[in-house]
Image 1 (cartoon, rainbow, N blue to C red):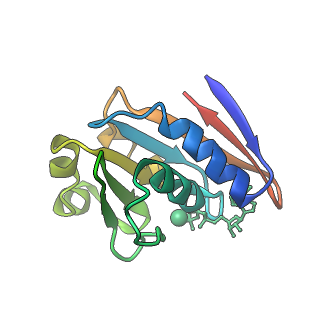
Image 2 (image 1 turned 90 degrees about the vertical axis):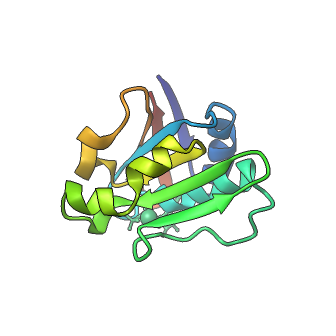
Length: 139
Ligand SMILES: Nc1ncnc2c1ncn2[C@@H]1O[C@H](COP(=O)(O)OP(=O)(O)OP(=O)(O)O)[C@@H](O)[C@H]1O
Ligand SMILES: [Mg+2]
């Protein structure tokens, strides 16, 4: 288990760049933490580090459900599970196909679909400590 503390969005992006060194092609990173915890901010930092040529701004995929970043070295599939109601819904997004095609899959609101997460997923919990402080726990 590793713990990081951030006091700004910039620091969150630096932590994301550190964690980017630990992820693998074909891997899964499950994010936990409530509304405004900083999940999307973290993903932005991660994509910047893994795939700097992906010029698309990372934004919350809440409406699209999944955003794809096709990098030279790795593809990143960024899911926001918040608006999905059940397993059928999740299946319809192509979630299981994405996982199988390699790349790195990242989920926001993993809490809602805990059973769908691969058993070897890296898990990152984000906790707000105060307005600008976030604690990241990686296991
Ligand atoms: N240290 C920090 N790291 C990241 N975000 C921070 C930090 N301090 C304050 N914030 C603020 O917290 C918010 C994080 O928003 P973000 O969209 O990343 O959250 P989220 O976890 O993706 O929320 P949602 O569940 O709505 O998708 C932003 O308003 C950001 O400015
Ligand atoms: Mg978000």
